[in-house]
Every structure is written in C-alpha cells, then in structure tokens.
Image 1 (cartoon, rainbow, N blue to C red):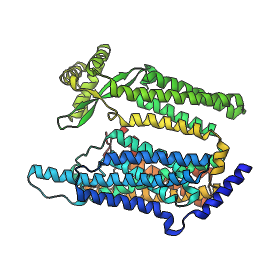
Image 2 (image 1 turned 120 degrees about the horizontal axis):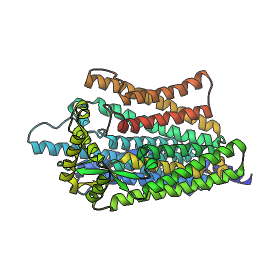
Image 3 (image 1 turned 180 degrees about the vertical axis):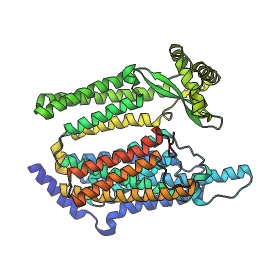
Image 4 (image 1 turned 30 degrees about the vertical axis):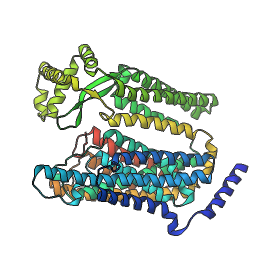
Length: 540
C-alpha cells in the first residue's frame, strides 16, 4: 500500500511540472521539424560526405531501443530522469527515422539524375516519381515512423509515456527487418508511375503504425486488467512454435537440420537469393531444444490454469527461461555462421551428393526466374531439370555466398519469436508493480478506442486510394489480389471493433482482443502476403 501511495505522490508531483498547451508537443515539433531541416541540408550540401540514410535508420533503431528500455525501467522504478530520457530519446528516434526517409528521397533524386546524365537524354521526372515508396524497405521505414510518431504524439500526456515501452520494441523489429532487407533502390515499371503510389503507400504506412500502437495499448490493457502472464506465455509460445515451423518449412522437426538460402551476385551489381539452401550446424538443434521447452511451457501452464497448481506454474516459468536461452543460442549461431562459413561451394557439393534432387529444384527455380511458363516446366522430366541445375551450379559455384539479406523475413521472425518470449518473462517479473504503474482501465480503453478508430479510417483511405490507383494502372478497381484481400479483412476487423463497441456496448477485454487480431492481420498483410503469396504486391 505504501508503494502505491509513493507512486501516486510521484505522479501528482510530476504532473505539476508537465508542460501544457503546445509546449507539451515540443518533442513532436522538434523531431519532425529537425528531420525536414536535415533533409533540406542534404539537398543543399549534396551527398558527398553526408550521413547516409541507412546510418540514420540504424540511429533511429538504437534510439527506439533506448527509449523503450528507459520507459520500461520507469514502470518498475519510477524516476523523473528515466521518464524524461525515454521521452526525448523517443523524439530522437522519430527524428532519425523521418530524416532517414527524407535523405533517401533526395538520394533517389540524385540517382535518377545520374541515370539521365549517363543516358544523355530525357527530362528529369516529376518529384513524386522517386519518392521512397517503391519496396518493402521504404514501407518499413515509414511503418516504423508511423508507430514512433503516434507514440510521441500520445506521449505529450505524462500518464501515457509508458506506451513507448510497449510500442517501440515492435517498431525496432520493423527497422531490424528493413536492415536485413537492404536499402537498394529498385526501378518501378512504368505502369506504377503514378502520383497515387505515394498517397496510397503513405496512408498504408501511417495507418499500420497507428494499428501497432493500438495493439500495444491492448496488451497494456490486458496486463492492467489482471490477465495472467501465464496465459500470455501460452499464446507467445504458440506463436514461437508457429515461427519455427514456418521458417524451416517443417524440416527442422523432420530432419533436425536448419538451412539458409544461398545468394548469387548478378551482373548489375545486385544479389539474388537462389533455391539452394545450406545446412547450418547446431542451429536446428538449438531450435528443437527451444521448441521442446515451449511445448513443456504449454503443458505446465495449462495444468496450472486448470488446476491452480503452483508447482507447475514454477516449472513453466523455468522452462520458458530455458527456451529463451535456446532461442538466443540459435539466433547467435545462425548469424555467426552466415558471416563466417567459407568454402560454400564444397559444402553445397557435399549436400548435393547426398541429395541429388536439389539440382532439380535449382533447375526449376532457374527456369521460373527466366520466365518460363509453369506448365512447360511441369512437363519437363526430372533428369532434364537436374542437368539444367547442375550446369548452372558449376558455372556459378565459386560465387555463391551466404547473407542475412537472403531471407530477411526468416531471421526477423526468429528474432520476433525471441522478443515475444522475452517480454512475457519481463511482464512476469513483479507483475503487480507493473500493473500499478499503468494508467486506469478506463483511460487505456478510451485510448484504445481512439487509435482503433484512426486505424479504421486510415485503412479505409488505403483501400479507396489503392482502388483508384489500380483502376488507373490496370483498368479495374478491385481484383481480389492477395494483398487487397488482406487489407480488406484487416479493415473489416477494425470495423467489427467499432461496431461491437457502438451497437453492443463491448469494451475492455473484448475490444483488446479485437485490436490484437486486427494488428496480426495487418502484419500478415504487410509481410505474409508480400513474401508468401503470389500477387501484384509481392516483393519476393
């Protein structure tokens, strides 16, 4: 009780010192204004010797991590210094994030200008032509910025500054994915050269960022409402098991081996992932150990929740921590071997000698990448595909290499599974103190409602502008493309959130579950559709 009184006393004292009016938005003004000024400076000084957009992105990532750490620390041990550092570091993160995107825009302009000078003809394209919304790296920058900006705007209220501890770790994961994807520029086909592209993708990134913050608020609400962390651990464990199964395509559980895609340099200076995968020693073992421990977590916590058996609760938490260690080992081994393995061609040759069918897979991939019809490839005998793959392999074997950029979604998914496990462990530590530090349920519920409403409106604008752009480019407003459908389902979910709240009076936990499902659908639209399903929006 004394701790609660001290916390309230601290809150009241600091509330008096909190700026009011437009001064409370000073971090937002400085972050956005500073990013614009840095972009203008880049235009004036030129690119030589100026900080690159990739370096600015990494600075944003570092600031988001630091801000989240200080705000999380402030929840457990209230400190005006920690809260202020968290607030202003969040502002720095937003500044670097937006500046990275702005500097990239200028760099894209310089690239277009260099191409024109090289070709010796043509006119400089209009400014929207090279706005950085061409690939998943650009979208990830804007997605993280949308989340950071929304968090910073909400943080003008002192009671809501805790939000950075929940939202910025997810923004960090998005920037981490962008880092692995790589910041290479791509040339869009002329059919996509429309002013609707930046409008549509800009709406997408900002609405995704708001949905992320809504998700973070929903998680905070469930914690405040007394949801047991053991239930959270069950869902995070199921998520991690799903990641292990998906990224390895079941092979890690059937063969005990985890493999990474092999890359090939192209004549134009870019790199391309191939159908070949190289086994990474010990990574599969670490993932299997982590998965077995998570299954134990599911069993122990299920028994605890059904029988209130404290012994199984204790076992479950120990198993969860053990799984976290195994996941760290797997990720570290994965990254280290990607960087250090040499003699790739001979390691691949050893694999192929044991499984010659890999040459057929390589031959099929090669024909598909060259545009051969799928029907024609399907009719080819396996021996012919094997010969095509074998010839290609020996012509290029000395140039094969490994890179984290070969499968950025795979590695980022493993890191995300680790992060989910880590945060459940953090929330399990002194949970009651954490709940006391969070705002009231009513405030969290209202904030969740506001952000869900904004996400719903943003997704609606996304669908409308996308339809107009599609009609301009393809001659039809809607084609049930996989990403169109995914965005539509996500929008319907937020619509259901609002409908049940307005007409049925649902709020609290029911609304929080809707917000979580809606954001998962947004993530599936953002990544799952882009990389796993065919369509006009696929990036890989």
